[in-house]
Length: 340
Image 1 (tube, one colour):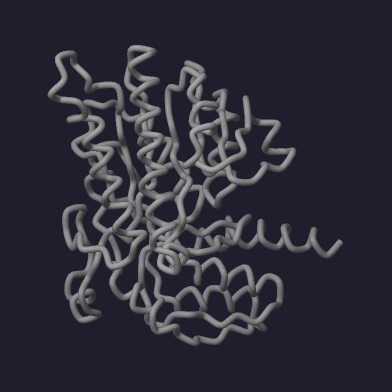
Image 2: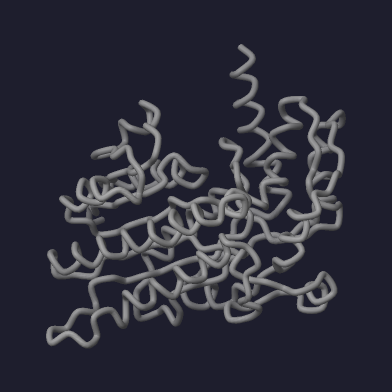
């Protein structure tokens, strides 16, 4: 295996910790960026931790001194947070991404090879006009229903096009060849469920919040209807999707952005699974009109056949295995340790 230097933004986020562990345990050197310092445990895994805002030039300069082979750009303001402050969402999600695409270009030109840019997009790029349409449409393909109804979705869809532009068209009118220094690849994540972190600011958070609240014996008001349905994925599968896409030969890829799926339960299905292990769970459905409307605009499931065909994508965790083998033992251990 060739050791790589990898830049990881948003290293403290819900994907960041797991991905950092995976990359360093695979023998790679990781430079991490986050607004907040990492724990001592995670900092010890890094070549360097750069604490700062992805909009700051000092942060960009600190990262650019490395000969970076791959960038995993996880830093973002999530859907609900971006909806509450759309202007900040745009600055973080679009301008921040642009900063690192430009960094990737400069580094790629300096080292004379394409820097792989791994981008976590989202099902929020889809926009379905009504619940009736959502039921009728069913699984969506990558090019279907691209009319996002949140600032987060708008930002992510634009970034998908930015990545394609920087990979294939950037400075195409220059005298010298200026493309070929970035290899942009992205997955559209469904809702991600982690055993170790409770995400904040995401519209799909009702699933992990329900599970974590039950494990702590805390009441929880679920902000969507019982019949609310979108696709979800266990965090280990999400991290594996990014690393498998990064490893895929370029000649096997027919797209720059791929749908990936795993399972698509209703909120009621998740509630039923939680109640099996936590019979006393105090979960009440109290839909928030605005957040429910966002969920209703997202597909009930995705068609990920392109990812399966091009780079062999296949989830390992369905809903039952996610809960029984991943969530239950890890969450139980996590909160029992808090009680010691």
